[in-house]
Image 1 (cartoon, rainbow, N blue to C red):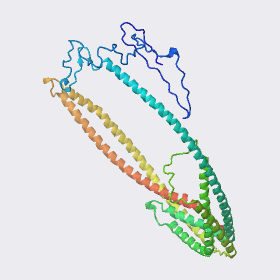
Image 2 (image 1 turned 180 degrees about the vertical axis):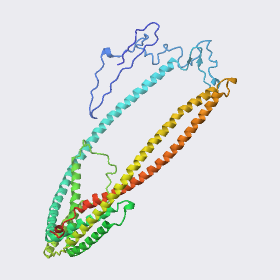
Image 3 (image 1 turned 90 degrees about the vertical axis):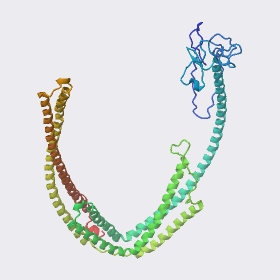
Image 4 (image 1 turned 30 degrees about the horizontal axis):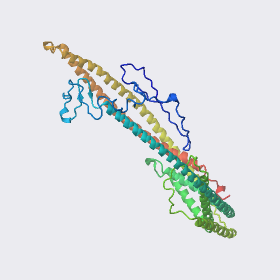
Length: 509
């Protein structure tokens, strides 16, 4: 309720100040919270309608239109005129007053456009519009609450039905996934059994992949040498011979395993198909499990535009079951064929361990000799680089000294030029070319000559510095290329060569 906080009215007071009440807005924790209506106000809390100027309680407030006989001297039916004969309203009050057609009532004290009754009528219109808007807002609020309650009930029912259906589908997928797991285990056992029958030949082929990978890796790493270091040296030739020898041995061994590898390919293809199917079903089961646990309070839910559209590649439930059964049947047929071939396995192994081991020793000796040569070149270049850097540092120090000396000459130049300028300000005949004037001009010339000499020397120092920087860059580039070549041969190639298999491993044992 609005409280009046005005000082006592005096006979000269015309209007009292009314302060607006402070209102508190209620925040709702949920859309279904019902608030009780506030209790009726007490007798002492009812706002008084009596005007501050002493009007009876039955009269409207002073800011609203008054009854007949209580209005001001300018009612709404009669326009305002001048206050007296001294304010005729025809004085020139603006540069464009005769063109705009607007002539307010003017006197020497004020300018007015509206009367008090017009102001009161505007206050009444504003209050009525606010009351109508408040009534409309209360009606819309009641309708919104009813709509929210109805929509929430329908949504909860549909969500419960969808959750139950997702639980049933997840159980079906889990059962089919268990059947695939048993079939995959049976096929894996069959593949392991077939591999055991040809263990020695298989082991030899597996070990042979290591020297082939080592030789190929060394050749590939050596292609990363800088451009000037890409030479066909002895290690390069020995590595190429080693790769060629490994390829010939592998061709002989693979020819023996042609028929068995064909069957193994079929076995692995059948297992892979089942694994893919199992993986898809695992992902589908996890997806449905996540969907079953989603609620309105989950923190991972997002808006997904277009989620209701069915993609073209989406299958039906009948096709899904048919595809799963066909995968299990194909795996059973492939496993029976593999069991028949297990008794016909014949392994032939060509022993090439001696040739491979001898070639590996020749490659390692060639790499060691090449690394020793590169280290000697690198050390010589590093000595030249240290000398160049020392000269470059001395040159840069001298350049800085010249620049400081040139900057310091600015002070002397400022002094002499200031003196000349001050002397040029002498009046009339006193502004003569005396001996002091000549000496100042000669001083300017001397300073300029000194600056020219130091700038010429600075230019020469800069040229020498650029030459030293160029030589430093060339030496650093050469050292970098040598270090990179050494790192490739020693840190990569020689390190890889330490994993070269022994003669016993190459023979298949």
